[in-house]
Image (cartoon, rainbow, N blue to C red; front, side, top):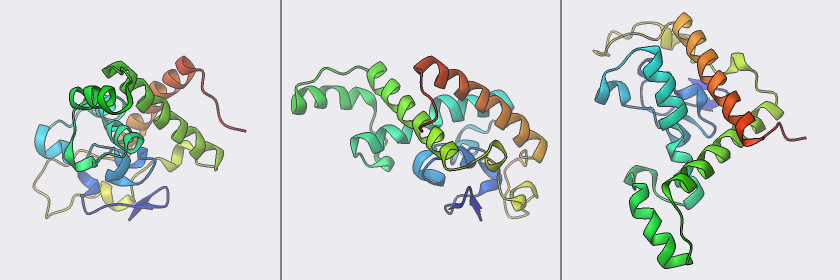
Amino acid sequence: MHCKGLELPAYLPETNPGYPFAIAGGHMSMRTFLLLVFEGKTDLDYWVDAIVNRGIYYTRDDLLGLCKFAGTPDRVIEPVFKEVYGLDITHDDLWHATQRTYLRGLLLERRQGTTLEDYDLPARAYQRNPNVQLPHFITPEFMAELRRRVFEAFEAQIAAYGLEVPA
């Protein structure tokens, strides 16, 4: 199973509507896996926030060359940057660099021909998996509304940063 031609990891797609929004594959650039297990939320507002404001967290680790699974908090990174590079960086600096990088990844996907409809889960993910004992909430309708709202938020961020589709 895949989203946008990128194979899904071992985590179950029927529990993670964030996968299609990954720019480098499943759990490598969208940190929304296991949120259903740990937080148990199934509403649209929660998942829009999880994708737009928390999911792109791993892009920061790619920027810095950090291990994604270490979960290094920003408060640890900031003094290290000062010590190693002599640069003062803030949480906001890290966040904005992460956002801009992620958004540029989305824009590059567009440049390569990815359409809004490509941000979808495999059809099997919409069927209840009898082996999964978690709430089944991801339907085609849920996904369509989620996609609309996520991209509404991303479009606002793209405009705010003055980014555009690369030529």
